[in-house]
Each structure stands twice: as structure tokens, then as C-alpha cells.
Image 1 (tube, rainbow, N blue to C red):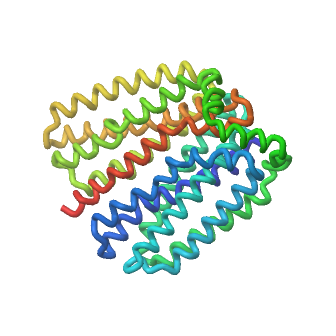
Image 2: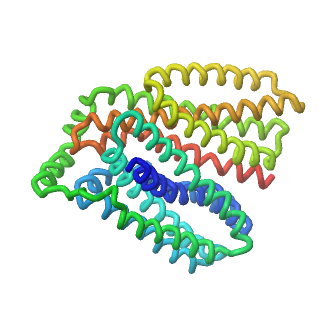
Image 3: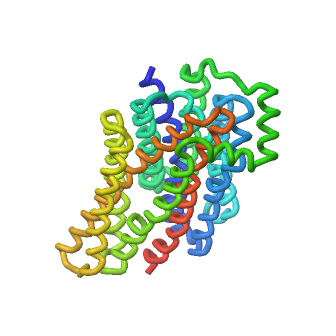
Length: 380
């Protein structure tokens, strides 16, 4: 039964990472090759904004229909969007490409809410939470690598249309799988009385926030996510840009920061799930943040003495890989902490409790808008 849950959640988060990989890695390169300006490419980052706004429609997803209906509907919608995208010519139909990306981000953000709700219901105990959140993080990253790396290697041979036709088949197959998935059996839609009470809470948001803040651990979790994730930008995003300005080429950074560092991040996320089944989350958090502090001191020292030599380049790559490994480990621990906190809340506000990951959404949107800097450097 546990394996069924992990396969189910892994597939959902894998396809959820595909739009991110498309927009982060594949489309900037493809659109630039098609002759689009850097301005047009940079403006596509605005299309990530549905991920920041998903807190607004989270109550609707939680209080109407079943998770199966929302998941099948959004995944099928993604399949249809890919079919429409296959008919677009990106060389001349920029607004069509932007519209398709916006639709994919909206649908994927709604799917994320339903998938999180299903995970909260399915996973029980720290062991299951650790494995489930490992599958969530690794599945999402694998989906982004598949779209941003694998499809980028194929698109020159297969072409734009066939690539999106392939994605439509992937989404369609997952929609059929979710429709018949036994792990969601027994789920019942919200009752009318509960829906009316939920609507009243939505009309009085201060009551919802008061309930959220009264759940043990919520204020600390919200503060931790906002401060830690926004502060992590210096370690994950800005350090590669500094290396780019100090005698490391964009091609080298593409390999080390795009492929090798992602492999270390996935490895860290996977190990995090195993450690959670062996140790308490509080102990792990303390140990991991001590490692993070030491690694940040090491990286900061490199910024002071960095010189164009083989030794210093090797030290920079080591620091980059170590930061991504620890970041992957912390991500799994953080998502498990959030889900633990969510399960302590009453069911009517669990989806809002889960949205306390707003810091993650803001962090992701801020880091994605910085990719235009990379495109400009590649142009130089």
C-alpha cells in the first residue's frame, strides 16, 4: 500500500515539474534561437505568478469536489494545452506561446494544491511523511530535468509540434492513471453544510488566519520558511553569477550548476527521506543547519580569495555542489515539517495551512526572474 502511495505521488509531482523545466531551461534557449529578443524572453518570467497567487484559489479546491476530480481535471487540461501548443509556431506566434505557458502554470498550480491535499490525507507518521516528501521533491526535480534537459536534446530532431504531442500523451496517460488510482478510493466530496461554513470563513479571512496561527508550530514554521528560503538566494543563485563574472564560462556553469549540482540536490533530498525514518526531525534540523553554516563560511571565504586558477575553480565547484546537496536535504526536511504542521490543523483549514509555503513560492519566482541575467551573459 505504501508503494502505491509513493508511485501515485511521484507521478503527480513529476508532471508538476514539467512546466517549470520547460520555462526555466528549454524555452529561453529555443526562443532565442528562433530570433526572439531578450526582452520577450525575460517577460515570460511573469507567467510564473499563478504560483504566488495560488493561495487565493486554494479554499475553492479544498472545499469543492474531490481531490480525484481536481487532479484528473487539471492533468487532462494540461494534456489539452499541450495539444494546442503543438499547433503553434513559436517563431511568429509569441503571444500564443505566452498564453500556453500561462495556462500550464495556472493548471499546474491548481494541481499542486490538490496533490498536497491528497498527500496530507494519505501519509501518516514521520516515516511515511519523510518518504512521501522525498518523492515529492525528487519527482518535481526529475520532471523539471526531463523537460529542461531531456526535451531540449530532442527538440532539434523532433521539432516543436512533436515535442508537445509527446507531452500531451504523458499528461493523458497520468490523467487515466489518477482516474483509476485505488489510493483515492473512499474519498467523499465536501458536504453542503461544510461548504457553507467554509464559504463563511472565506468571507471572514481574519478568522481563518486566527485559526491558522493557533495551530501549534505554525507561527515558527511561517517565519522560518520566509526567512530561510529568501535568504538562501545568496548561496544558490548569486554565487554562480559571481563565478560567471570571475573567469568561469557560461558553458562550464551550465554543466556544473545545471547538471552536477542538480544531481547533488536530488541526492540530498533522497537521503533526507531516509534520515527522517531513522531520526527525529528536530535533531536533523539542528545538525543540517550546522552543516549549512560551515558551508556558507567556506563559500564566503572563496568570495574573498577567488582567483582564476584550477585549484580555486575546483574549490568553487565543490562549494556549489555542497550547497545544492544541503539545500536538497533541507527542502525535504522543511516540506515534512510543513506537512506535520498541516496535519495538526482542523480539516477545514488544512489547505490554507499548507499554503504557509508562500516563502517557497516567492523564492522560486524571484530566482526565476533572475534567469534573464544568464540569458544576457550568454548573449555576450
